[in-house]
Length: 317
Length: 317
Image (cartoon, rainbow over all chains, first blue to last red):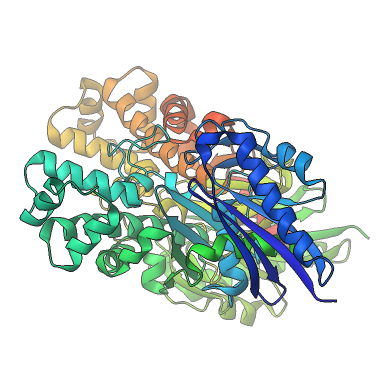
C-alpha cells in the first residue's frame, strides 16, 4: 500500500497543509490563512482540522506514514515549547506540541520551519544530491537550517541554526533579537525596507527611491528590487549591501563547516540578480577555504513549498 | 594484552611524541625540536624516527593500537596534502601523508593539530562528559576544532573548523589569511602584540606599556598580560579587546551550533583572568540563544598536551 504523509507549514500569514507521497508527489493540499489575530487556540484548531481533513480524505486509499508540522520561531525540542516567534506574536513560551497533540490524538513531528524547509531542499530540492547543506530563508526575518549527514542538526536544545543572528557588523543596525549588526538586520526583506528608509532620511536617495517613497505605495523589498532592475542607484546599493552581508555570513559558514552546498530561499531570494555579484565577491574576499575550493551557492528549487515537503519528509525519514 | 597508541603533535617549534594507554595514561614521551629551518625531509625523519623509537620500546610489552599525527595547517584529508601552514613555512602543498608513510611503513592517522587537541579534550579533558564541543586554541594563530557526536567534524575536504578566520570586524585588522577583521587578528597571541604596537604608534600608550616597549625585551602576549595583572590601563584594554572578539565569535557559534561546551586552549589562554569578563559580557550581548540558556566556556584542562592525547585517541577510536 502506497504511503503518504501530511506536511504542515505554519507561517505568520499562510497556513499550508499538504498530502505528499514517498516520491515527493504533492497530491492534495489546503491553503488556509493563519489569522493570528484570532488567537493561538483558534490557529491550532484550524491547523489540526486541516490535518484531519486530509488524513480522512486519503487514509483508506493510502497508508499514513505520519504528520510533520513546521512552525516559525525557536522551539525547545525536548519540551515542545515555542520559546519565541517574531511571526506569531503572543505565542512566547507556548506549549505548541501539547496543544496540537490534544487536538490531533495521533503522533506527529514538530519542527522549526526553516529546518523543515532545509530538509525539503535536501529531500527533493536543490540539495537532493548532497549529504550536508546550509539553508537560509530570506523572508521578513532570516531563518536557517543545517543538514549534516542527511539529517537536521538541532544542537542540544533545538535552537541550532539561528543563522540570521550571527553578528556581521558589531556596531550596526539594531536587530529584533536585541543584538546589533546581525545578518537578519542586513539581508532580510525587512532590512531592505530599513535600508531604504535610512537612505531617505539621510537625504541621499535617488530620484526613483524618493518617488517610490512619495507614491503612497507601501515600501517593500519587492518594490525596491523593481527599482534596482531599472538601474536605480540607491536600490542597487541597497541590494549590494544585502549581497555583502550574505557573502560575509556564507564565508564564515564555509570556514566553519567546510560543506559544499548553500541554498537561499524565501521571498527576498527573488532579488538574486541584484545581490549575487556582491555576494560572490564578498565570499571570495572573506574565505580562504573558498579561494582554495569554491562551493555551490544556489537558489531554493522548491520555493515556498520547501517547508511542507520537509515537514512531510520528517514522517518518511 | 594492554593496548597503547602513539600520539604526535608537530608544532612550529616543538615536536612531541608520546606513548599513551587506553585509559589516557601517558607512560613515555619524547620532547624534540621541530627545527623547521632544516627542511621538511629532515623534520619528517625526526618525527618518524621518534615514533619508531617509542614503538620499538613498548611493542613487546603492549599491543600497538595505532599511531596518530597532528600537524598544524589546512589538510586536504582525502589526499593527505598540507595545503597551507603558517607555522611550517615552505610546507605549502606538501604531501605530508605520503612522506610520513614512506618512512613509517605502517598505517597512521593524520589530523589537523587543533582538531586533535579538541578530540583530546573530549577524550579525557574539559569536554569528557559531553558529546559536542567547540575548541579554540589561542596561540600565534587561532585554531579550531569541532566535535559533533563524539567525533571530529571534518567537512567535505578536511578544512572545517577554521574558526580563527570568521570575520568579526569587516574593515578591521589585516589577517594572515588575506581577510580583514578575523577572530585570529583580534584574539591570538600575535594580535595582542599587534594591538600593543598600534597603541604605541598612536601615542596613547600607558606608562607601563611604553616602558616595556623601551626595555629592549621582546613584546609578547605574556608580558602584556603581566602588565594587565598589575593594573596597566593599556594592557587591560588590549585584553578587553581579546575578550570582546572571543565573546562575539562564541556568541555566533552558539547561535549556529546550539551546543553546550566551548573550550579555550593554547598559550594565550593563560591570560584568561584578563579577558573573561569582557568575553562573557559580549556573549550575553550578542546571543539570545545564550540569554535563553547559557553554556559552558571552559579553559582547556590538558593544556599543551591536548594534541598528543587527541592524536593517540585517533588510534583507539
